Image 1: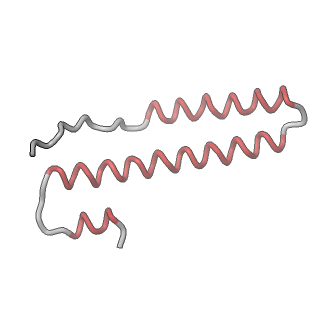
Image 2 (image 1 turned 135 degrees about the vertical axis):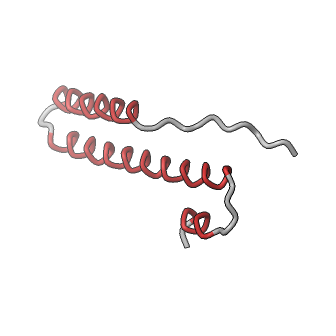
Length: 83
């Protein structure tokens, strides 16, 4: 069972559990953005005829990645638990 499904299946409700689920989902979405950007960069590098063109196309991919990540939801600040 996936960790998110496991957390959701837990009967007790807590803010920490809800935050953990939200953070895992946010990180998964961010990872998918990174994977897609890397695949695009690979395609750009393989398809560009010369190094200069490769650099320009890769730069554009990275700029778009930064814009996408900037618009993604930020992680919430979590205060450490007191033991």
